[in-house]
Image (tube, rainbow, N blue to C red; front, side, top):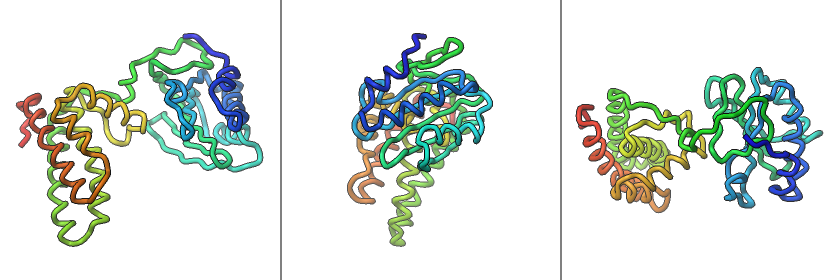
Length: 267
C-alpha cells in the first residue's frame, strides 16, 4: 500500500486552472481527523482522462456528517457556493458530485462506516491502516442468482416490451422513450446474469463506473449473439429502432438464461 504525496500528484495530473481547487479539496481531507484514508480512482488514475473528466476522490471517514461536508466544501472553494448533487449509494456510502466555479468537477465518495472498497488501480494518498485492494469487478457487487428474482426480472422485461406497441399506438412517444431507458438497464442486467451466472446488483447500487464494468464484462465474456445485441443498444435513430434493438438483445439473452438456469422456470 504505497502512499503517494498528494501535492506531487496534483501537480503532475491536474491542469493549472484546476490545481488550486483540487489541492484544497485534498488538503482539507488529509487534515480532517475523521478521515482515515483518502484515495483516487477513475480516469485520472487509469490515464484515460480528457478535458471533460472529473476527479474521483474517495475517503473512509467513520462518523462523517453534514457538518464535515460543509466544512470541506468551504475549504475547497472559499466564498462561493458549489453545485452539489447528493446520492446515497448504500447504508453508509455517500456520494457527492460537485462542481466548483464553472468547470472544476470533483466526485467525492465517502465510506462513513463500512470498510472501503479499493479497485486495483486506485492511488492511495492517506491511510492509517493497510487498505485491501479488490478487482475492478467488485464495483458491480456480484451476488448469487435467486431463481425467483430472476423469473421476476425476466417477466418484467417481457411485460415492458409488450407495452411499447400500446404506447406507440396511442402516440405516446415520450413515454416510450422513457421506458426504453429503463429497459436498457434491465436488459443489460439480464445479459450479465446470462453471461456470468451471477447477478450484478440492483440498479440503485450502480454508478457510471460500475455500469462501464458491466459493459466491459459483456464485451469480453458474452456470447457473440449477446455482444452483438449489446452493441445495438446505443440510443440512436428512431424510437421504433431502439425498441427493435432491445428485442434483438432479449432473444439471445433468454436463450442463454434457459441454458444456464434450466430449472428457473423461465418462459
